[in-house]
Image (cartoon, rainbow, N blue to C red; front, top):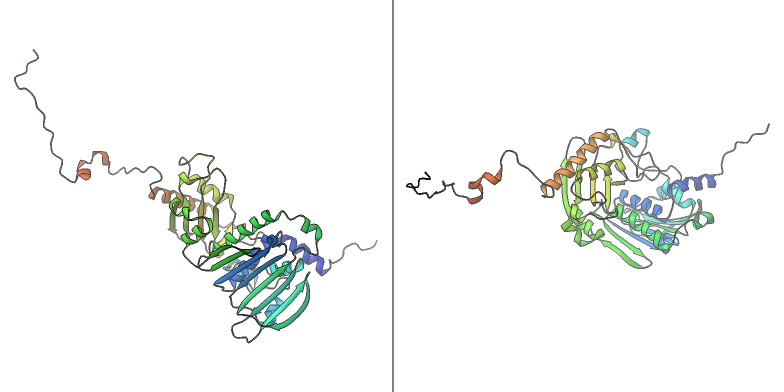
Length: 367
């Protein structure tokens, strides 16, 4: 009987891996923005054309790469973030799988220009469809510029599954917001078809929220700042009267990484119970700082799902923090069982209470 098992060609294996990481142009945007943050950039510019189908370019002023690193970064499982398996439980950076650039290069035409501050000239790398084309010296400023052209050009069937430009651009903006929101100390700029969509200078968290979602959010939000031995919770939640009929503006970040968690969503909704109609949805921008040893973020290719060692405690602390914040803002009814103010006349008038005067006729006899 003949053998039927064979190894896949390298280019096919790369395209299969790319299918997990690069689902649409927004996936490329997410990976490149996160790499720029890990590079220590203080300014990041994102340029897209035709909703990322024709061009996605991310320019940063980070530390750049050496000639060797610039070439090696496009290889599968090449990463500077981890060295051993134990490092997976001590991750503070964004990307660590070492698959992003290799996956992007497998389904697009990629040009990288990068230079370290100590270098006189930069490096230019060209990769097409996962195949290395050339590496040359070039003029470049300190930092990196990734230029991704013609996404899915070598997989026409995959390209046909992309939605209209307006839909794909909406996904790109969503990813841009999820990265820019927790990093308010970085200047982010977004251009789409030569039009400036966002220009967000480094600022405070509340100013970043207003820059992304509108200046009127300032009066609709309640701050949260709670520190415990298990988790540190900070951010803002919306007042019940500002809740909307549709879900939106609900953001969870764990160690500044955007996550999706129906379990944590339920904790927040429970805090709003009896404060708003059941079919309304509040806004929140919540940041949880947890020891990396107590979480596992390596359970999904896009790293938007997470596991907590003690999720019940996280749930309880989140629920109580939101409820306490709403109470402090006088959103919900509060009772002080130690002092009933309605009977404390001295507290309301500032003067000692006097006995009332009663007039009566001492000669009156009902009989």
